[in-house]
Every structure is written in structure tokens, then in C-alpha cells.
Length: 611
Image (cartoon, rainbow, N blue to C red; front, side, top):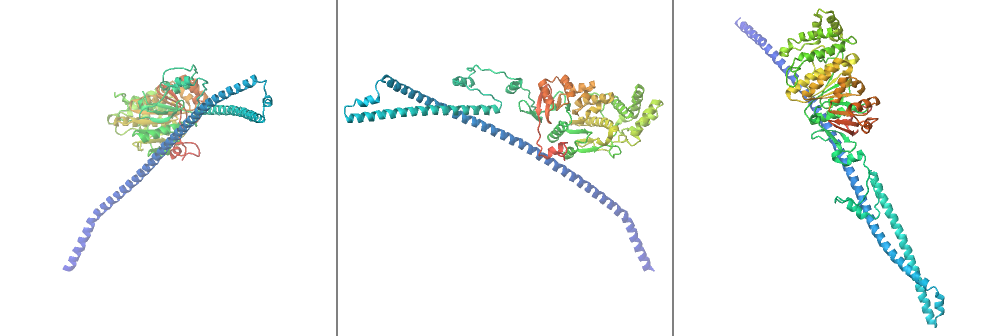
């Protein structure tokens, strides 16, 4: 019995021990699984980082290849210039030698000519005596033979002298023909380089003294220089754009010098890129984006309504956020960063600007119904109510759902109408902007792809993106980071008063918050119908104008005072050709990018050429 009892106690102790150990084992396994999950996540992040590094190295290699290609082209051009200069020197030496030979031949010819004249004169004066009379006057046979031999030598001498004179005359003619041919060759070579050369007959010494740095003019020959020629020859009167630490935008079409601009050195960094479809607008923007991404640590944010920038952004290691109805990605339309109302360091009521944004948003969502004075008052009141708690500590941002609920609590019928108009965009199928933001907004390069939003939401989407960008700019400004903003199809903002005003206010704040905004559009006339848009365009220190439609050309001429000659650079211009305005300088430019690179395929939108 005692043995059985001892066995039972032993078994019971083992069971109790195993039960006590089970929770510890379970907890340990959970920790291991969690650690494995973290390791897997870290490894996945490592792969993404390695892939991004690989893609950046590829872009760097392409850029270095492009630079080497430019260096090679420059070396080829220098070699060609050296070859032509060598040809000219050889021809000049040949001309000099021929001139010397021609001079010597002329002296010989003159000497022979004088001798022949004396001989002919003597024969003429002694014309009464002939060789026959001379022979008949011989007194003996030996004298006859002597005189016959003498007459034979004289005749042979006369023939030789005549032959030599003829040969010298022919040689002079050949040398003169060669001299003329060499002169025409030099003039042809110079003409190929747009340089006209003239022959200075009997004025060689005066010509030499004129070109030497004596300050003397011995040749009284003048010509009229066109403005373009004068600008190319006189460096201080030719407009050039060369900023230290700037970005390459092409070459000056007049002087062929590089155009290097740093927008940060201008009075304001905001800009516009204008041009018809196919003129190279988005390509020019992508070139600038690539240069900024590879040469600075600045943040870059892009609003892309046509899905043209995603391949480049991914290659640069950026974040592509696709926003569409039914998408899992959400941007809270009512996000508001701390400092939203600050202007030049002074704190103002942030709800003033936010109310303006919400009014613009409601106007877009309620179209075609107008937002009248009553509606504005109701919207302003509700904005103040929903943000009342938030502005105290900037925690728990309100959403459009809470804003609509606040509208429903208002007693006015107009409030119910506004709430009803917002229902589809708050609780319906188009509620993409009615939730808290769940997108990583901290990536250095951000692209908002709103291509799939459709016509109903695209303008709203651009408005919400602009507000989100303003919040990001405010946060970056606090951290001392610069932000570059690119908004394609910016003309959509100028469709109504409120969105135009909000864009203008944001445009001003970007400059004060260490940000540079770029608007891209092909519809210049549509933009310039708005006085606000016209002022924004006129006050932008940097403009990139590619080929323009005839209706847009006159608008730009009136706005920017473009001359007729400058207008020719944006009339039916090739892709990548146009005018660039930097501060007060307006310069024609040419920007040809090599097509045999991966970088070109990432940036182009031409069918069959893009990746």
C-alpha cells in the first residue's frame, strides 16, 4: 500500500510540474514566433533597401555614362576644331609658299621679257641684214662654216629663250590658279562655321596690322552685326544663366553655353512648366526631380493625375500612393498639422485657412449647386466645432464623418442639404477621404497617384493632396528640411474661386516655409482666365516654356513681354526646345537627352520608349 501511495504521489508531482511548465513553454513559443516575424520583416525591409540601392546605383551609372558621352562629344568637337585649324594653317602655309614662288616667277618672267625685248629690238634695228646676207659675205669656206654655226647657235638660243618664257608664263598661270583654289578652300571652311572671309589684294600688311592687338585699324572695312551676332560675340551683353551649385537645364540656343540654374537663389523658388502635349513638360519636370533627388537630401512630393511619374519615383526609392474609390489607402481631408496657421513666424488662427479649404472642398463635392453666404456661415461654424478639441493638443484629428455629423446637428435646412450632398463622399462608395490617414507620409520622395479617382473625385483629390502637402511642408519646415512640390495639370485648381484662392494662399505659404512649388500645365489660356492664376504666373521667378499653342502665345507675349524673335523659339518648337525665364533673364534653350539610357526610358512617356 505504501508503495502504491508513493507511486501515486510521484505521478501526481510529475503532472503538477508539467502543468506548471506548460504556460512558460507557451509564452516562450509566442516570443520565438514574434521574433521570427520581426526577423522576416527586417529581412524583407533589407531586400527592399538593397533593391532601392541597386536601382540608385543603376541611375548613377546611367548619369555617369551620360556625362562621359557629353565629354566624348566635347572631345570630338575639339578634335574637329583642331583639325580644321590645322587645315587652315596648312593652306595658309601653302598660300605663302605659292605667293613666294609666284613672286620669284614674276621676277624671272620680267627679266626674260626684258631680254627678249632687247633681242627683238636689235633684230628690228638690224633688219636690213639677214642671215643669208651674212653667209654670202663670207670670204672663205671656213668663214662660211663658222658663220653658219654661229647663226645656228643664235637661232637655238632664241628658241630656248622663247620656250623658257612660255614655260614661266604657264607656271605663273598654274600657281595663280592653285592660289585661287586654296583661297576658295579657306573661304569655304570658314563659311561652314558662319564666318565670312574676304581677300585683301595688295593690303596684306595693313590687314596684319589691323588684327594685331595694337588698337589700330588700317583696313577701312565695317559690317553690321545683328543682335544675335553681337550677343554671341560680346560676353557681357549676352544673357547667360550660370548659378553655382545649380541644376542643368540645357544649353543656350544663342551662345551654346550651359544653362545651370539654382532656383533657391531667386527671389522665390516657385515655377511653372508650360507647353502643348508632347512638347516635353513632364520630361523636363522629371529631369529636375532626378537632379534634386541625386544631388540633395531635400524632400520631393508629386501630385500625378495622369500616372506618368511612378516608374521614376520607384527607381529613386520613393513611395507611390495610389488613391482611388474603394482603395485601402486613405488620406484624411481634415488633417491639420501644428503650425498650420503660422505666417512668417507669427501664429494666427489656423481655422481661418482650414475653413477656406473645407469651403473649397464642399464646393467641389456639391457641384453644380453653389455655396452661398448661408452655407459658408454654416460650414465655418461646423469647422470651428469639430476642431475645438483638436487645436488644444493636436491629438485625434477629426474626419469628414465627424464634420457631416456636426452638420446634421445644425438646425438650418441648408445644413441638412450640405450633409446630404456629402453623404456619397462620407458614407458612400466615394469615401476615400473620410477616414484617418493610413499612408506612410514620411518617405523622402512621395507620389500621389490619383489617376483612378475618376472625373467626380479628381479635382477633389488634387485639393486634398494640396492640403496634405501643406501639412507636410509645415512639418519639414520645423525640422529644417526643404520641400520640392510638383503639381501636374494644375489648371484644375483654377476651375472655381475657392480652390483658386486656397492654391494661391498655399503657394505663398510654400515660399515662406522653405518649399518650392512647380505647376505643370498645357492649358495656359484656361489658367490665365483667372486673375489669380495670371498673378501667380507673372510673379514666378522661374518659367520653363516649351512649344505653345497659337492661342497661348499671344497671352504669354502680353504677360511676359516676349519679343518677336524670342517668340519664334516657342512656335512649333521641337520637343525639349523653348524659352527659360530665370528672374529677369529670358533665354532660348535646347535640351536634348540621350535616348539610349535606362534613365530616358524611365522618364519618357512616348509609346514604345518607356519602361
